[in-house]
Image 1: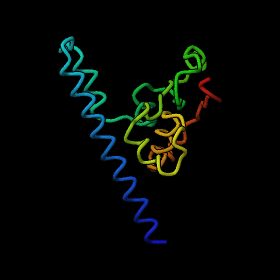
Image 2: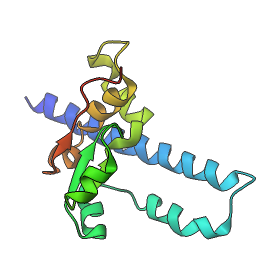
Image 3: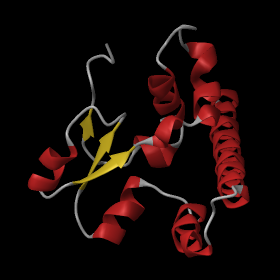
Length: 136
C-alpha cells in the first residue's frame, strides 16, 4: 500500500509541475504577441499566482460552481449568485496524466478534468459541479 501511496504522491507532484510549466508557457506566449499591451500585465499576474475554486471564491466573495465547459448559460449562475469556474480549462498536462487510464478517443476536456482530479486540491474542493451530458 505504501508503494501505491508514493506513486499517487509522485503523480500529484508531477501534475502540479506540468500544469505550472504549461501555465508559464501560455502566459509567456501571450506576452510575446504583437498585440500585447502592458495594461494586460495585471490580469496575467492574476493567472501566474494560480487558481483554484477556493481561491476564486475568496476573491469574488461568492460561492463557486465548477464547469467543464461553457455549455450552460452563464446568466443562470449569475442569477443564482454563483460564480462559474471553468475547471482545469482543458489543460494538456492534466489530460496527459489521465490518458493511460482512459479511452483514446475520449473528450479532451473530460480527460483534462479527470487528470486534474488526481490532485487533492481539485478532488476535495467541496464546490458543486455542472456537467454537460455531451458535446454533440
